[in-house]
Image 1 (cartoon, helix red, strand yellow):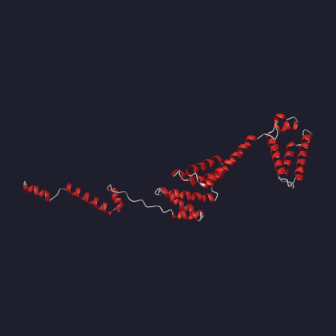
Image 2 (cartoon, rainbow, N blue to C red):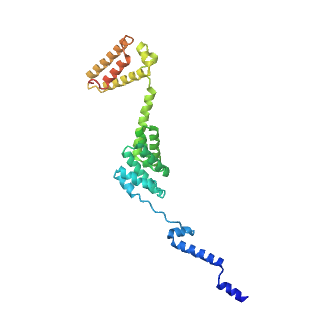
Image 3 (cartoon, rainbow, N blue to C red):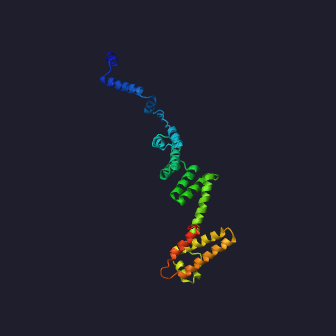
Length: 269
């Protein structure tokens, strides 16, 4: 019996040999792998991620080279391995470059993506607000300027932009309040021509503009004599308008447009 046991230890079975070969093959393969991959395969530290170089993107954008920046920045922005901080830098740099080249929609897209990644960027909110303003979207512009000031109350550009927009919106509001209303009280309109002006928004706006322009030229007159002459001209226009309205061939709208052009500097004035 002892002889049979010694014989089995000296001469392994075929099954034992196959097991040893599989273990040896695995060890050789693991040794052949790069260190980072081998560690990952054995449950160790994951392989290090290669850092994406954004220098080419930033240099091309700073140099105002749109073609190079498009290529270099796309390599950074479209790379899944790009670190968040570098991605934001690339988006902001390319967005600013697009803005300088009047590619407004592309600039807004890059700024918006950067703000999604980091909503604390006051400069980017202000920059996007200026882009919305270029597109004529004043509500969104005001919203972005306000967001920039909320983050940084001392942001000089955002303060100036927000103040200018507040004045603009106030002016628009004032215009809307008087839109379609003439310079006089329609409740007291007695003449047919006055009632016609009150009943037509376009004529009412023309009348109000004529009144405003007349007040301006009187205010800017060089001396009392000039102011008196300008007032006499306005009185004559009103008299002709009142007398001419309703007669064959008289065009009230045309007469009012011509008067406004003269007041605003056309035909030698």
